[in-house]
Image (cartoon, rainbow, N blue to C red):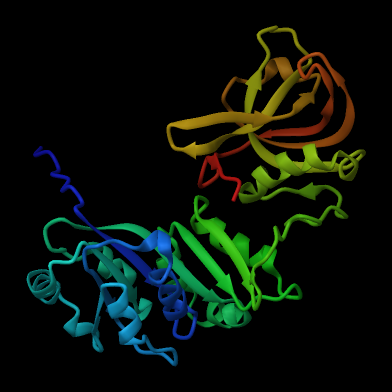
Amino acid sequence: MAEEVIEEIDIPIYLITGFLESGKTSFIDFTVQQEYFQIEEPTLLIACEEGEEEYEEAVLKQHNTILEVVEEPEDFTPELLESYQKKYKPDRIILEYNPLWSVKRLEEMKMPKGWGIVQQIVTVDGSSFQIYMNNMKSIFMEMSKNADMVMFNRCSTDLPLANFRRSIKVVNPAAEILFEDEEGEMADIFEDSVPYDLDTEPVEIDDVDYGIFYVDIEDHPERYEGKTVKFRGIVLKSRDVGADFFVPGRMAMTCCAEDTQFIGYVCKSKDARKLVMGQWVTVTAKISMEYMDVYGEEGPVMYAQEIHPCRPPQSELVYFS
């Protein structure tokens, strides 16, 4: 079998996508003017739709940015992009892309030599997100699947922001998710709350929320004292084969795929010795805050009520954003 040839990216493409009036133009206009984004070589801005917001060509020219507008999807071809390369010889590309033209089609398109997508950002109007999810869910999921960042703007605290976050994390656990209101980026939406109901019995921790659960139980132990929780995790066993505890947890990405670590808390169970190292289990357990030698201090100790073998989640890695 022939080896796949991976072309080096000399001309990065910054892909900005989102539905009409989601804030793409405003985001790009702001970014182009920032000091950290300045380069001496030309930047080519390709806009695949025209919304209410328009670019001021004088401002773009001031920042050595050339604007090309493509109005129809059939015009957006490899040949057109090749013509831009020859005409402008850009050092980088900002692509404001219409998701109705299919992000998958874009990702599969043959690009000019040296061109390659290095960052994907999705902008979302938080006030109309639920409408789009009800009517155009498949398109939204397609553009979010490989996004590095999803930015919700025009948000308010009365919106179900935790549910918005979960909708993205289900298809793209690694995506960074930001929320902005009219004043700018909102504070951590989970600062005083969590994306699961602490008043239920048991408290069910979704796979995408395990990272938040792990951090929050350490920051706010009083919330969890006496609570019963249910979650999915990998079995980590003690070197003592007769130990009456194990650690159900997850592998977490701390900065990159090569830098992961196991995170979890001690769970006591009379069946601990019967478990197999590395197997996936669903655990229902009651939490107590008490001293454990393995912690060297007081910390969360779970007492198993039920342990059942299960399948791994869709994404086995945990992310904290």
